[in-house]
Length: 125
Image (cartoon, rainbow, N blue to C red; front, side, top):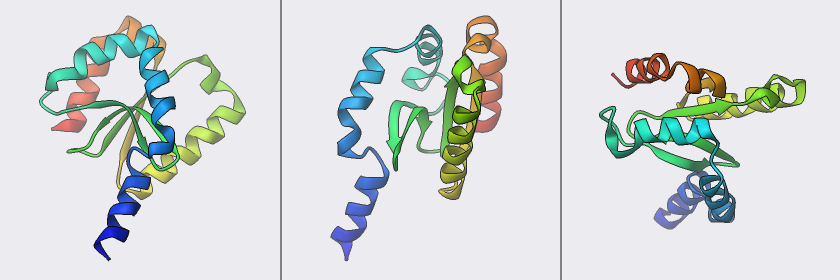
């Protein structure tokens, strides 16, 4: 019974099948991802974040396990109907696991990082 529970957790969090894709995403970060990671890493907001962390079939940009908070950064392609539907399904799945999802536009990260960090901090407290 215990090994079954462990297998479910392995599949839900950081699925080994997604490891190479997570690594690829970390190695090819956007400028917005690099900037926000420089502010989130090393528990600068008081909580540990992981980047490119998978939960179920999805790879999250940033995830704080202790607060069950996902941070997603969106580029212009997220304005398209197909992407909006995918994002909606993804958020619904994560919410079903009691994970809160905060979404920010890349342009917002690059032009107003302090407001973004304040919003994240408010969800952490």
